[in-house]
Length: 334
Image 1 (cartoon, helix red, strand yellow):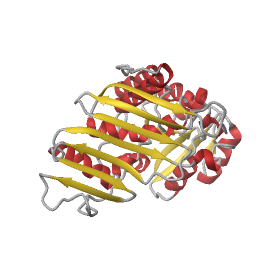
Image 2 (tube, one colour; image 1 turned 120 degrees about the vertical axis):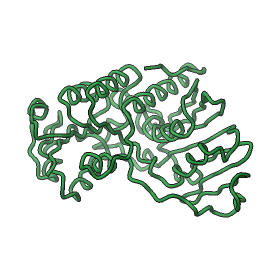
Image 3 (spheres, one colour; image 1 turned 60 degrees about the vertical axis):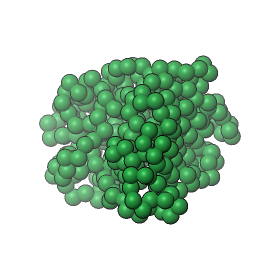
Image 4 (cartoon, helix red, strand yellow; image 1 turned 60 degrees about the horizontal axis):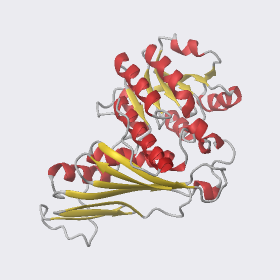
């Protein structure tokens, strides 16, 4: 039985993570810690774990091989640095940091420690994203001119952040608002598919005002190092997000509507872009599940590296600066 610890129970995904852990026979959460001891107690009860108010108990316990950090984002840096120093494999919820400076500092500590790392990007396992990335690499789209990825839901409209998860609509704790919270998933996929970004800009807005001046919707423009342009939309005020991926090149195109992909390429016989393309790869574990599989020794599939996670925080920080300054911004380098 592999012993792990849950450090911070603040993130909205925490209940789901607890359910996934409880379905695994080979894992046991030995400790739960949170600066809010009542919150820690509630999570510990669901995990049949013990609450500790002293983090050194976790860091000094050689039986604990990995930690899951689901704290508020502004608490990530000291927790991640301590976990790396203690040589614990670690999962830290997205985004890794508030911005470039703390994220790159954490990434260096993780890399120097030589521990496994993963963050909460789950869309790399989607068959459509896998397929499109493979065909970008094969050159099936020719010279790519533009790509669009979106991630939107109705969180503000439904009051998802009114009570237990209120901190997520407080940029002083979360580092971002709706655009950064959901947009970081699409940003991960765009960079995973297209490579590094030269410069970015964005426009963000408050729509309902339910969470004060916290942004609830946004649209970003990214210029990639390969010359293509990308757009990224994200928000908490959308009643649906049906067309979430579009890519256009000189020799092909693709777009996703719900769970269906439409694909056309001069390099692939039988593609017309009019009927759903069903020859897709199988879905793959990603995000939290992939981390659990890895620490249990079930797979050696690649995790999101600490450097990748830090770079995405840097690009998102640049998008927010672009919105604030109404100009193009170059993301900070590590």
